[in-house]
Length: 417
Image (cartoon, rainbow, N blue to C red; front, side):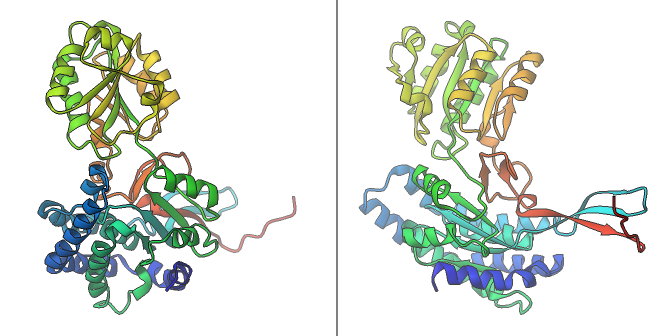
């Protein structure tokens, strides 16, 4: 099927999926988790083929890391689906209600969006995770992966299909994989107006630019992660070191790893050289402002481009700033509204940073690496929104619903006013 035909099938199935009970959805999700485990060997073999081909093609280490399924990541796929089962079903939740003077009872009730499409690059785990989130929230999922992960995505989809087939109430079109990885198929999804209720692109700048330019369907941008960590003069030095090292080195290829370290001027002499030594020992290349290079001569001189770069690698830009307001100003100029952090004991400084930084998530005395749907208690995320409408930050089940006004009356009629 073409991408458009896939969307048409999803749209036709949307009402039946929205009508599924919580128990029906949870049972199929449990079977999906079991199917992932049962098809483990086939999925890993397909992934080995994709990884080998990616390496032969000269794909970057960052993309290879995102592509690779290890035993631990495979176990995480099934565990993640079971985590979604344990989460409250958002569909039908009453988020508010009130009675008007004329006796009308107004309720705000959550309901599914309908058809959710995701275009994603390299990450085959997205296939299972988005399928689980969409089904639990009563939506149909249209999944369009990239050619680099084609074999793995097909193997995962085969497992999911076997689980869905055991449940006659669940339409086969509830979860579909667009097998055509061409740019044309991506464009079809972007322009499937009236069929796709939400499109989430998860990929590099070229994909995001294409969606922003060409999409006629509603979108939420899962954008770049040019994340920052500001170390205030009031910071506990040991905490600042631990958070910095973790935020950069624990997994540099993901969007919540920091790319720029902002350091208060008072720390240049007694703290900065030590943490840069530790970062370098961990394999990090340091690109510093002039003051950083003076204090730590092993740093490479940073260019203006460095402040805007999402390295997704063991590279860190470092700048000295005068105070929290200078740090906030830098982040407003160069940040991507993904995740930002501060280490500070001065509560007024921390609160000012948290209030004025423009970002979906702000971390105070904790690593921005926690910017993740699973860590937030969402089970998993469909992406991290770097915009403000209709959702911001990691997107879980509630982000895949909308609110309907349901009005209960007893025969009221409105007079002309």
